[in-house]
Image (cartoon, rainbow, N blue to C red; front, side, top):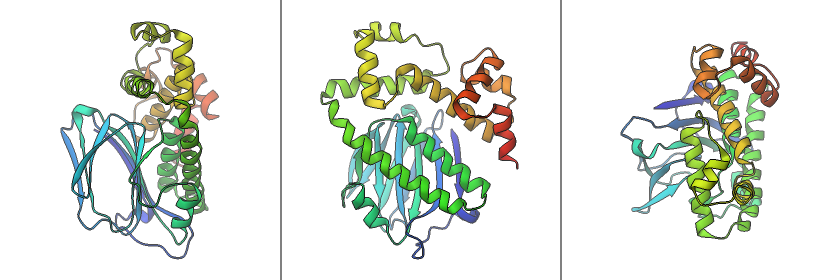
Length: 284
């Protein structure tokens, strides 16, 4: 299991903040590979809000005592003092991102961005932009650079905006077949991004024309299949640079590149800095 998380002032205690309109207390991610089961049960809930994003696989949630299986492409919102009971299973290869937040204006912000008052599951589709925002929040909580609390609030509101925008775009794909096909593709890419994937072969194997597949995938995720795989590789490389001692060549191989120089050029083009510079900034 891969896990990465960070907490405001390194405290795992939940809290309610009344001084700020929006305040982020913690953020993290889990990716289950071999761990059989990861349960969470908070019968009295928390004092803050929690927003979870299912990036791949699926998760099992219980709302009012009834189980609901939530697949990738959805977010789950818990409000203060709501019972929280959910499970991740290794067989599902679940990848989830989470953030806890509070503040004196949260209710108005949720309303402003069209998030229903009593909704738990929010269908948003799968987007790498979500993952990037969560990873940036984790990094800000770790580094604690000047004004990081304001930056975290900015990222949190940016996440609300992304949810609102992509929810508005979602009706373009109305067929349940298309949604299932795109969800399956996203899951496949998350599991095999480090391998050589031919978009043409994938489309043909699944009975789709290449142009039809690329067009519908982009409508569903906001990226072409090639861009999506590239972003998966780069974002996972960032995670390895942050959380492991692997050298650049080893990380390049892990995420699917035999040539570390080519990997470094791609990384710099996507992130604006080289992998070594990215790692060095984490220790400054």
